[in-house]
Image (cartoon, rainbow, N blue to C red; front, top):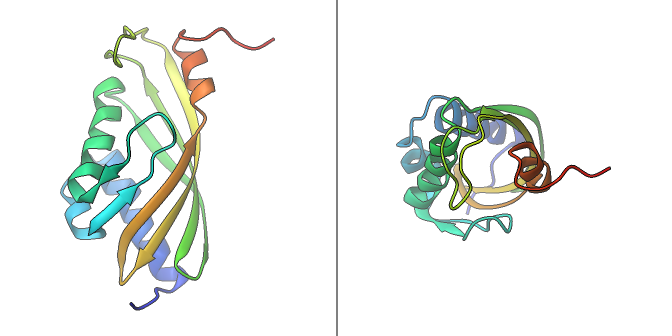
Length: 144
């Protein structure tokens, strides 16, 4: 296994987030994720496996928030791991499970850890601010 440089990580992850999340180019997962890619989820989703699993996770977000855009705020890399901070913004326009769309605009922050080996994303751990998301769409009361 060859390690990648921080500059290579930045190129790979910038492309991943821009192409997949903002341009809705789901095929980019075939190019940038390893065949055995695992997204360990953040408690709100089951772990996704392989490039197809990565694409399906993002498609679910796009279905609920059709105008959604993701901003890549920071990338910090050490060895084969990169920590990524992102902000997702969109309008809750389609149901999520039993939750009907509220039409509310949301802002969701996230911290992810991406492991890159041989130029491919092989593993991801993430933590989205889901309490804030649920408050913004009216599924939970705001904290005082």
